[in-house]
Amino acid sequence: FMLHDFLKQSLIMAQIPFSTDEPLAQKSTFKVGSSAPLFVKPYTTEQFRSAIGGATAAELPFFVLGGGSNVVFPDSPLEAVVISTQNLSEITVIDKEDVDDNTLSEDTVLVNCQCGTPMQTFVNFCTNHNLSGAQEFAGLPGTIGGAVYMNARCFDKSISDILYQTEQIEIISKINTKVTTTNFNPSQWDYKKSPFQPNQESNNSQEPTIPKYNFSEHKIFVSSATFKLTRKSPEEKSQIQEECKKYINERKNKGHFNFPSAGSVFKNNRNFGAPSGKIIQDADLLGYAIGGAQVAPFHGNIIINKENATATQIKELVQHVQKVVKEKFGFSLEPEIIFL
View 1 (cartoon, rainbow, N blue to C red):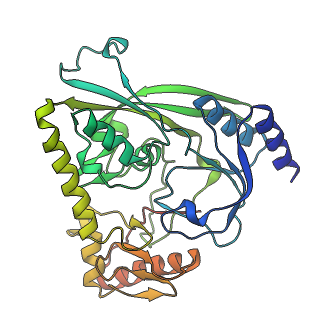
View 2 (view 1 turned 135 degrees about the vertical axis):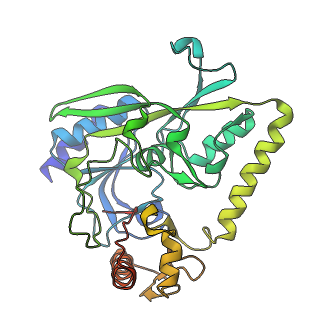
View 3 (view 1 turned 90 degrees about the horizontal axis):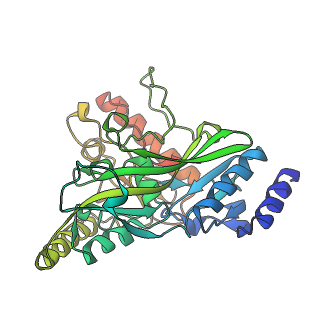
């Protein structure tokens, strides 16, 4: 508690808003979870950096929360500070004169989004300004920061396909943080992998596991991202709108919005020869439930909170699916949702 008090004092001095014993269930798309002892809501990148630095100096575990669309909060109070990016949602068009880069074509437009910008706000901004390139992400819940962290992928397009630059806050030491900028380097990105994720130990045993979120491993946090888009003529605006509508309807038809869920639970693995959802369906697991958590009857790779599910039930269901698929087909499904 002393440490929390130390952090509270530094937040008050830095005029960074926070609340205590904040309920978490409504802050995730799964709608499960207890509370956070301290819930911090910075308004600027500098405040964001101060909050990360303060928690690090107090030696408190902390979690940076975006839209909560890939997160399962625990049933008991979270023993960590939550730093929410909900107030960091500014979008700006960057003047290409300020970027010394002669490889950018005439019709390229650079758009910078703070990490808490909802994906849908970014897509709408692009549509309103006749910018093409982000249509596949229409209807994706969550924020820019989370999408960059996970290297979100929708309809065969990854965030890294349109990424130009990232700005991040790095923890250098217990008392030192810095803000840095990095140009996109394709060698650091892969299918649902980004340089912001800690190095995953390769799972040699090939036994299905649920990756544990390790607070101390995370030393680098997305504060904003700049994307490369293509300027279209005003006449082509309706075409961009139509494409966005098409992708949103596909999500609706797949049932993404019918129940609280975190979208895809498992990564697809090209070596399996079929998407994870199809494999789970072939294992006769559609509709299988543990308590209020259920494998969606309409899609194998979505677990839904059908009725007051708990985090424990969701986790047990994930493990059950992994076990059955491993026994039937020999594949180890890798979850992409984060259990805290």
